[in-house]
Length: 96
Image (cartoon, rainbow, N blue to C red; front, side, top):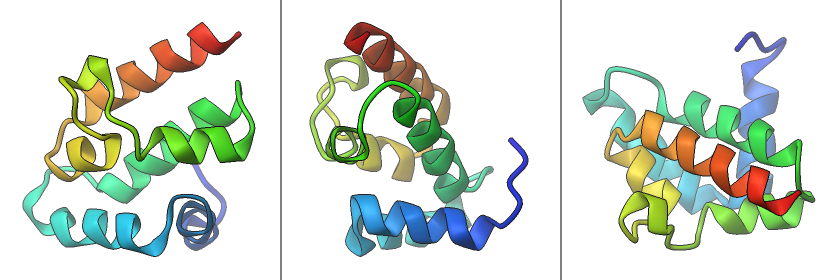
């Protein structure tokens, strides 16, 4: 996904899900083939298409059945990018 200013995206992610969560993703980035913060922003955009920001932010911190009970932040930090994207899309579609 093309973004005009990735720093603004990260700032928005930090505002919504919290510095601690984004810092965890940042710490994991060196070990992963893709940027977990960028994927988290993509997930946020999916969720924002369906629910208010507060609900989207809360989703990142809730254990998800589709992620085998893991929280999305935990799953992203572990490199489960496609699984989190799929779980977000399924959850968002169920909200409509």
